[in-house]
Length: 114
Length: 456
Image 1 (cartoon, rainbow over the protein chains, first blue to last red):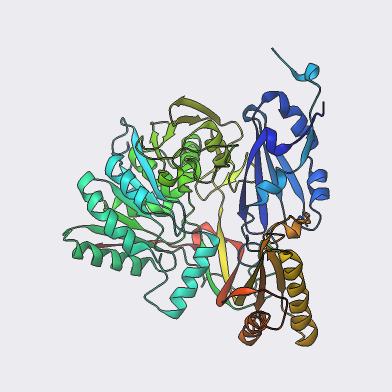
Image 2 (cartoon, rainbow over the protein chains, first blue to last red):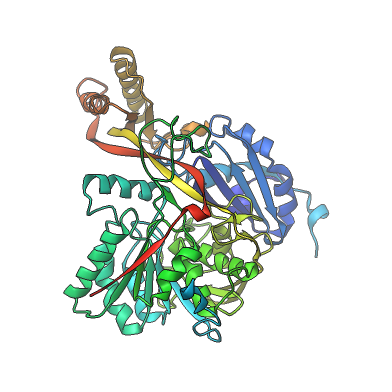
């Protein structure tokens, strides 16, 4: 059985913008999946996945007690809402770009706490 | 600061404050704000209506007409809300003044008179516009200086905070209208007034800032930016309600909505809003406090009731953030649609032809973008692969200092109908003035806010 899933299937997300900086908060639903998401969603992974979109630095902030990660992407909005020619100048839909990424889940034995 | 001293002890510190949000952006819905005001037993209703985009539009509008520049939907909102404010003793606070708070206040007074609301008072706050303080050498957060930026500086607005808002609230006016104020400050100021929190009580100011941050985007916390059919359901989203918070004396709060309204308040909707437009969760910077949301707890305590607590605070920043608006020239947008068998290929051909005509034949050098809506328009920049569709729209967009160039983009896009692939239709095009923005800082003591009160 494949343990490789879309982030979409195990988490939800919301995108926000400030100037040319986009942030996408990702919220994992099952605590058993959090470690894998935290391990796999790295700044390098985000930059490599969207090299044409994310031109600046990427930071990731963790809120483990809420099963959250905040992905902050600089120079990721084509100049920001008042400059971009993208129809979605706010990058409101960027949350669904992130949710497309695949996550390799840990084997059940390692994570299942009952 | 005679007025601020009167804050001591608060207005009614022992009682829970009920504060609602009746708009989270410029064009937010009106009906649910009316419902919340009618049924919510609110002390305060806050309408938060400015974004980086709408602040820029306000300056654009005021340039065209000196009596404009406030929120274009102010009149409709005031007509619906003012009578209910009076009936329920709810005070209204809003940044709908945008680039012209004085004109917004005058319009509100005129509407109150039309409605027969004699004696209604409106306080308006100015001083956020700091265009005179900014000069060519002012550095921009984005790099370079004001003088080096492309386009003439139209206006600069500082984000005011509770120190500027409280004198306006202390006038006792029924309605308080402002220009640029930090969004959470619009909610924090009524809390400080009510509970009498000290100016350096960073923990409580952070707690109130958390409440403001969760409410400021309206329905984004009640299910309005959340639903994903089959994945994240929101009941009766068509009648989604605005949020209200019940806030206690230490800033602990329950976020909820009217039981009669649609929508949903859950740990998930609150968590998504907790980090909305937040970068470092340990340092959410407002003019009032540096709030740390990293240890906030989110707990479902009833149906559509979520308790939040645990925000921490550090002393406020010395400088105030400023948004600068520059003349951005013209934004031109035009489109035609293709549908049916092989629609994507026909639209692709139209895109290649237009690219060749605009760039190759006419030699346009302004920023241009060619999208296939339905295929690659939003995430095309991210390199996400194409999708299958038989209903696709070619969109061409340009940003230019020369209006003639934008006119040319519209002309050539319309002409593709009969000088391009088969079956194209539905041309639409528009040209709008564009305003670009950048950020900077000013010293707090360089900003001088002023309050005036009008009576109907």
